[in-house]
Image: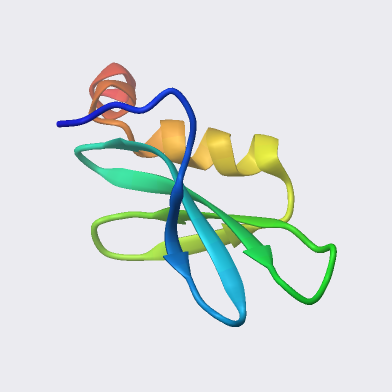
Amino acid sequence: MLRLRYPIPTTDNAGFLVFYLKEHSAGSLLSLTPRHTKAHAWAVIGPRESWEFTDHAKAVAKFEELSPEARLARR
């Protein structure tokens, strides 16, 4: 797997720039930037569902909650 020092756009279309930020075996953390507004969002993509957040800290917390290590620690 290639690891980069900074995120690069994974999708570049007329509406959004989508940046891949992190991943683990149970999910991915993405940054979503609409081209026509100053709004910013983050998405967490899990194995069965996904979540969108306007707060970075909440997105990171959800992403970490999905990690296999966190699930093992809760058992």
